[in-house]
Length: 295
Image 1: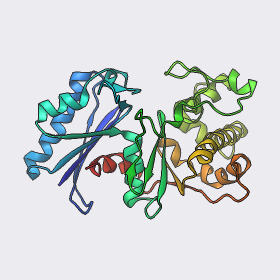
Image 2 (image 1 turned 180 degrees about the vertical axis):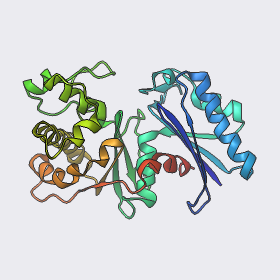
Image 3 (image 1 turned 90 degrees about the horizontal axis):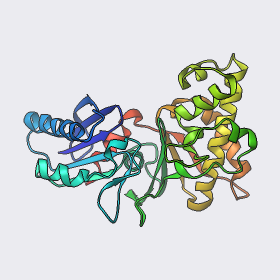
């Protein structure tokens, strides 16, 4: 049996699967926004599974950010209380078990590549469009981590060919840089641009629900898909994946799939464009299932 844990900014979800990937049990708790209580929450999830089902063979955890190749400390997490902490070491000391710790976008991408929307494809790029924006590269069902452990972090490339208008209605990223893709195609980024432009105070769901009747919502979605296509075109030009699988809250917007491929054709450096952009298969379970598949 395998345990997968998805350590999110608001919730910590755990899943227990067998070697064939069949779900045996699932639990969810609120993520506490301090380091020590986060560790205690993870331990409680593991303890609950082992108490009810017996000792497990492996534990995988997906989390925001990455483990520094030099210090073994967490870096780049938008759950900022994790940054600079030896999460893997502390959990292994507490649980007395080997922990497989991986970026949550990589876990999502792995899940979709193994038995989801990307099954059967050699090169899969998994994209998170949620509170933040991330990505994972899977080659032959293996995670490509990279020398600096930042493979797939397309959320912190700059939106290509930004106009003055796009600069005007854009906030600085939490990473302190200007123009990051995360500030354009995350849920909060999408809402922020709309609100700055229209002096409003709507969340992403309210804006999307205005389509198709509201012209401002339509324009916002048109701009969103264009931003998404411009960012993904950089990934395609470099990686040239077989398929791109979208996940996270914004991936539930049907307007994206009706329009994204036509937009991409304008920006990708090729005469004939074959890469598919599709919705995830596992929904909210992608990250936690991918964490379980880490070992």
